[in-house]
Image (cartoon, rainbow, N blue to C red):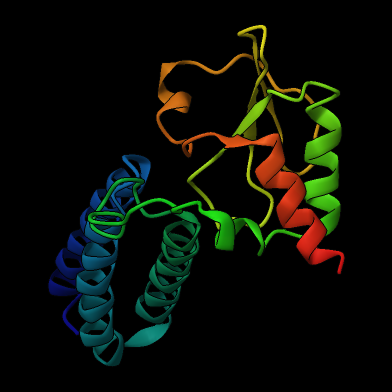
Length: 183
């Protein structure tokens, strides 16, 4: 390929790579992927036209730059609240759903309710519902949040965290579910 035309093509691909890198820095996953595909197509067109050692090495270097961009794009995560989550409702907790929790989980939950017969528990509605975080509402009006994986108290909930919880379940409901599991 004529050296001037090759240089122009190479510079255009470099500019496109910089734009894709800027999109990656902005964590724009879909736009980064689209930009990457355009750059990849340009490089596929340029590669067979490279003549001589210098042009072939230049194409190889551009290929390495693209591989790096691909790695960075794969590390990006979809934006939370994007199209993937629209319309998605949280976990709906009822007694049948409670029965799906493991017996050891329910036992530790009851231990954290201590001896308060009037305590109630609200379970987190996000995640997969295997080891949900939970809040125990004690009869003295105190509320303690617990990690579902360690059953240790977690920092006080802020306003955003309290909206993703189930209605309260009484200690008696939890005991009944656990008794049915242990039969």
